[in-house]
Image 1 (cartoon, rainbow, N blue to C red):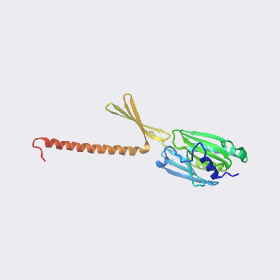
Image 2: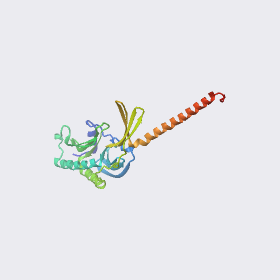
Image 3: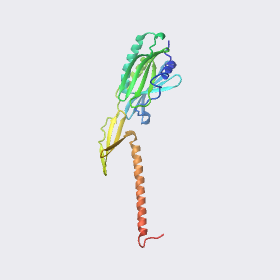
Length: 273
């Protein structure tokens, strides 16, 4: 009985409550939208599948993108912070040991839901569901990534026979880059306050698992509203405001000049057209 890569891929694409294996994003954040640097990469061939483990770095820190390329060319991927990758590595050892203790698959004794063992990793706003599954074609570890605030779910499936090889490749990367996520560690600017007429505006800089942001709040009597602007687009936000300021200044200058000319022409002895 073989753990056929294409058969496994078919199983987790069809009739699965976790949805398809679409691409995920690391921070919601879509790391590809930020300045991103690739630090290292490993490629594994496990049966009919290829797996790429890429260590990347952006403003928020370091992470690992795991991409699965199936026999039919279909691509699935998940993102792991380095600290999460370290937890995942530990679970891979546990699942590998459990898989080794199972003995040969028995097609007549397959669990109804196909699950042999399950674990969950919770990392800030992310959950990773690890399910060792079995069907009539073989055994595999399905890793599903979900985001608590919504968004697409993503998952990969690792043939059970390749769990040790996958763990060892992950270990090599963690030995080189550690399990610290990094990210911005400096002191953030203090908040600012601006009062205009009967309104108060507050500018507060903060940081969460998605990165650095500015929260701009408008407060008036019992009314309060706020928007949050990610740090990666502050310069664009500034440029738009600057453009409006320049255009309004030009409009004001033109209006003042026109008013002056009209006032002069209306005075006795003024120029007449």
